[in-house]
Image 1 (cartoon, helix red, strand yellow):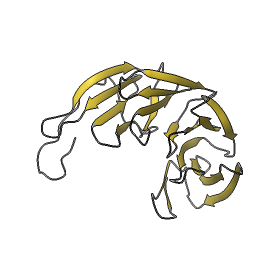
Image 2 (cartoon, one colour):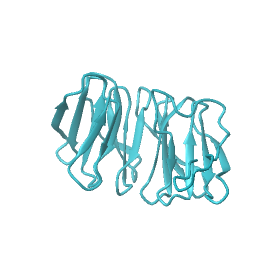
Image 3 (cartoon, rainbow, N blue to C red):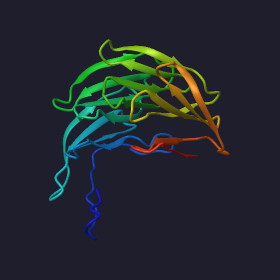
Length: 212
């Protein structure tokens, strides 16, 4: 944990038995929206909740055996009350950050779930596996839309800040934009010479950043 205002040694947070960050999954370390909570996920199938005290250090308060395989991604809801996690057990799980208990599990994927993210209003979740993107309704706990548009492994999928558009990136070197109202691909972006591993929308302006 680095303090950007001071030239001091970083605070080390130790606890996981195996790798947290790896070359295939780099979205498993997140601050909550208000910054008071840090959650880390690992190949050891666990989630660790840390209470952040910047004057002293982050304290591990909860360890959860969350999945039965490697965890690939986590995401906070906009209010910080919920946390989603996904992994190689083909499941998306929703947790309460208040009592750190499992709320429910979303089951539809037939491959490793590589990424999951809450919509801006926290009424939906988007998740992707190797081939398919799912949109979930968190009221019914069911998938309401699915897309299978890429010819390569899907690495990431993101909500636009307005909540009615998502973007996906893939090993097929393409980025695709989807309108959730019409349920169609509305744009395909090509230009990368290698697999596109990461994307993100600008929070206010009409820009999308990508890397390969």
